[in-house]
Amino acid sequence: MRNIILTIIFTVVGVFSSYGQLIPLAPITSMDVNNLTIKKISNSNSIDMFDRNQQLIQMFGSPTSSEPYIFEMEERVGTLYKYSGNEFYFTNRFYGFELVSGAFAIGNNNNFLKVGDSTSMISNFLPGYSPRGNDNIIYLKNGADYVSSVIFIESNSNVITKISWNHF
Image 1 (tube, rainbow, N blue to C red):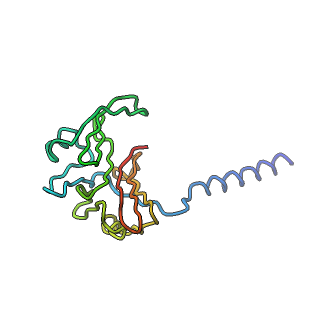
Image 2: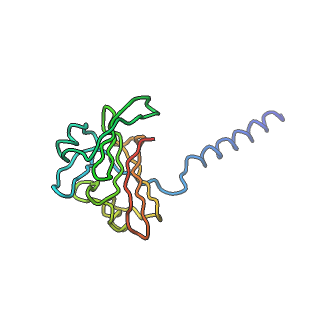
Image 3: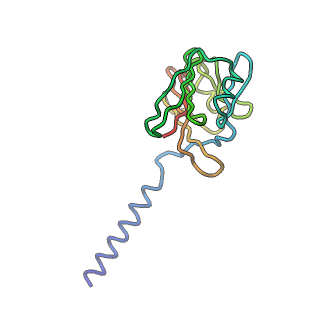
């Protein structure tokens, strides 16, 4: 009888503790990666998140510099392209970026966001999103499934200072 009572107690505790771990503290804000583009402000040319480095150079012109870049997690060498301080990372595909000037913008259909914009513009870029201080994170989905990447939006005094896309 004692074993039955202990089994019931452990089962109830296990179920409720597992359930508590599934509920996020704050709602997860996400967007579909298939709708994202990066636009060069000076000529409005853009690339999408699935383009290769050939499209980057074709649409944005020759980079200020390019160099081999080691992707330690994937154990491969890729290429880092720099456009006046803005960085674009490629392996066999587009791997990430770091925008530090207003020369480029990330977009979702007709709504674009760039360095120098007010953090209040994030809600135009992603309707329903409320900026959360200096560091904002938007999780990316491919259809209904989350992908292992996020967009980080850093700000200072309500002005966006950096936008980056990273895999994790």
